[in-house]
Length: 364
Length: 163
Ligand code: SF4
Ligand code: SF4
Image 1 (cartoon, chains in turn blue, cyan):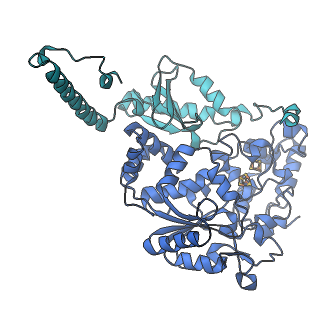
Image 2 (spheres, each protein chain N blue to C red; image 1 turned 45 degrees about the vertical axis):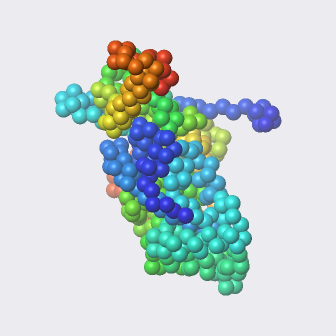
């Protein structure tokens, strides 16, 4: 159960020095994507931070989100944050099983009523009274409602919990939905991704620890600090896109030269995630850097986008053609997309912002 | 995995056009920060984890900064390496976890990196520790040689002072 000790105290008890604490604050600020100038503020807040109780429910999911987190590359910071929160219930990670596990959940809910953070991964099946997925004889739907009632806030980890994810893919046999389709009266943070970037998961928990509140969210309930930037806007291949230089296959000259992967189905232009900066596998690389387009895994409906390798199409209208076609023309003219006049480019950019799954599948 | 090892993998580090990378804008940012340090004495911290680096970008940046004459290693919650670059006042501060995995890379533009100077709270602690040691020392000596303790220099081989 959560004890009322501060984070600084808990670090001190482990023999972490002041410099160690400063380092921890630096890494936490970086994790939260805060500018380094805010490190002293993070330190001041973390000195006083109390230990929040966390209940973690896993519903219809593949455990990839938990894997992403527990295999993340920043064991010191992440595990210290993790050790500091009181993870009172987590099906996969807890030692207790059966009645004892359920008892721990009920205890935590009672003791920290109104104050605990509820983390959910996995979608919730609604068909057949929710009987497609049950834990200890309780349907996911029922357990979610029960646990949400006393939660201070809910963090939906992974695209399944946030927007339904793969279980929701057509024809959605289990009637899967995300948390926010069911719970309407609690603050919910969506941390989508399939899986989400581990540092982003911890970043959100760290935000709660540091500021005692939830980060600012975008219109899809995602923390702006991690999801505020478009993959395409931060992509280092962007200059090739602008010049209309595209890889046509995965092994042509363009692919070898690192050209833009738009024509190979990259969903970067409609995807908001932190991959281009936070990267994967110990900061080694990210899909586009490894030569594969973004599949848009942090967007609602990405599973039904209509083909991982199908190029995005831009809504018609004043551009008069798909960006790919325009770009191909540009290439032929030796000038690429840059040859499009300014207003057309702006229209294209605008179109990207508002593009939906339906637009995606629209071919011209 | 010997079978996988046999697969020849080649990749081009220079796949991104240098002019597209982030090394050059960062060098300009460092220049602004150095000016600020020179004219207003104000230090700057840049977190490189927040920069969308393409392949080779980071190496290009580090090569441009070069290596200077100071380096230090701090052991606290895993190692931290601090190196001055060939440009005085421009420091690389590399935070690692205990498994030597890099957590954060900062460029610090300052007279001396923050983490290197002694935290104020540690000086309070140091004073208390030293007082304790002096106490123990005095007691130890007054027990064994009453009367002569104050003339004796502190025994530098005493284990609690050696560390
Ligand atoms: S389309 Fe994809 S590969 Fe091309 S610039 Fe955008 S995000 Fe990068
Ligand atoms: S590059 Fe796109 S699909 Fe891949 S992990 Fe990032 S957001 Fe998801």
